[in-house]
Image (tube, rainbow, N blue to C red):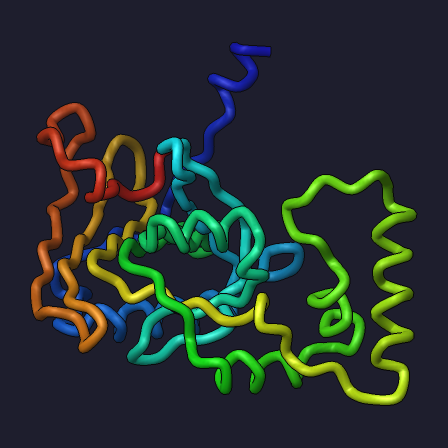
Length: 237
């Protein structure tokens, strides 16, 4: 099994990320790449799917897949139950890291920075366009709390349905949007054989990105210099 895993690899044949392709405004590159992903990636891949990493009070990292639901000058927005494990992690340590991976395009983007709650009005605006079942679930689901069995969850949902049988559910205080205001980002593309490209951007939040862009030339991997963990290489073959 170990050998089978070691032999699992693919060739990345698309062009790398060149200095000429690196715009002064990193949001512009993300918008371009995200638009490409929306057009190119097909089910089951979701172009707005991302990994969110947080750290608990004991310093242990946790990660999970979420969906990006907003992108503007405030940052990258996702919605969650603030009482969930990730919500509690971010309340104690308001810094997170995100990774987008688009396999068809052989691209990934890493984003790191401070995470802040959006306004209640912004949370409610998104909450109201969600399907009814999702809105009720925000009230019923005891996030990150151990329950006896599925029957308990179904009971909670039924009680919530009865509670809002005569009125539309409103956005609960424990649920809402969270925006990552980037302080650094890294964009990588897969390239052939033992070559890798990466671009790293230092950013200033929340007013906007600093105009700092440091593309690294394609270099044989064995000759790559040591780099800080925050500066990611491209896709690993």
